[in-house]
Image 1 (spheres, rainbow, N blue to C red):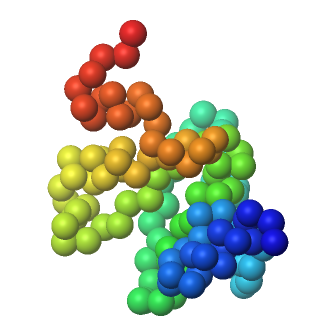
Image 2: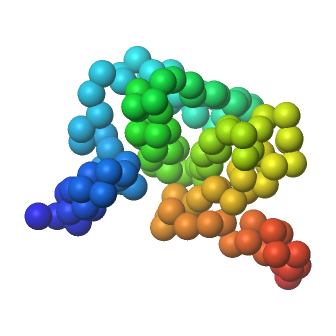
Length: 126
């Protein structure tokens, strides 16, 4: 079994969304995924866009966000996902921005961007 297949099965056993390989079993999201890929191409041209994903419990929001994040990584983007909730309401922009930075990941290793870690901790980058 290859590494991605193993990671997918391990995540599914835990009831969580796998970190990679999502396109291998994404079904029924072709239209939405095509729209998000168009948005990524739009942003790649130096423009900006924000998308909000909403839906009922169990509708696949986390899976879809992870799928879009994987597509963004493939196109060389850093990506972040923020859950708007009572703990991070949209009306408190400083909280949402903080969570955006906390969740920002780079495509190479899906790790936190080093410059943001320094920024968050108050270090300077030389």
